[in-house]
Length: 424
Image (cartoon, rainbow, N blue to C red):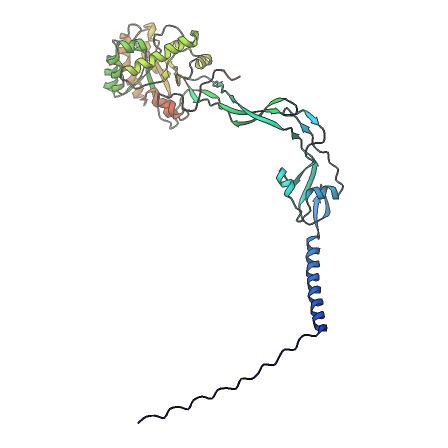
């Protein structure tokens, strides 16, 4: 059976809206007056807030200033008398009085920069100190000049002298005044770095008990015998070889290094103390010896023992940075006197101490007494607890000598130079 359809909904009648009554002239006037009054009240409050007074300490006295006042306004508004700075030349001579900065100021104990002097605005509770103005330098041009490093000496001589610091060229402004025409040094843009020679009697920083055997004037017919003795006791030494002997016996120079000992230089010919040579002769004595050692197949070296142990700061200077370390000694065997085996042993052991360097000889004369004394020296010192080290090892153990020098082959680093003048 079909259901009867629902009757259609009747539409609701639309009621007409009542028109709004326009505001009367009086109401409009009242509204405008109210808005203006409120705006005036708010604006007046803002204006009063922006122009309120705040308390500050001015040159030690509490006073009131308008908020956001600049320093110039504070100075003029409170009758502060200060002297302006002057216009000065690049050398500091007064060119025109009173044409510098009008005043200087510090706030809360900190001196203000020129930019801060302009941007400061009072907020309240600051401690302001106004003082005389700073001088202003005349307009000027700026050029640059190089400052060459000097060579600084060690304070106390030790058995090992070395390059503690390489030299670097500095760069400094040179100012030329456009008003005065004067020239003066300005700021150091890149500081000069002097080369420094250090000197020390090395002491192992770890407290170990070590000693260094060294042999001069080889290689020679005695060299291999020395190496055999060193091998027998499982130790190493340092051989300061002559360049001309290295040229004549390159296999022996290489044998020294192959045994584990160190090869260093004793100059080319041992002809004269290095202190007597000019720069050219010094360069040959030192450089030719280093070249001969390298040509033998041994590792390059810049470690030197000067003949007779003579080396001055002037020699370091004339050396041009060609050598990085100069090795002296603490215990002299005096084997060159041929004093007898017992005397040589005694000279090398009686006053031994950790870090000491023993001087013996490989060439330059009869070394039979040395060959007989060497095993006794080694046995005596080993019985006393000493370990034998090379010069490179001793330098490293000291903990004070730069790493590049301890390598035994330090050269002037890139960007560094060698001085031509001693520091005062």
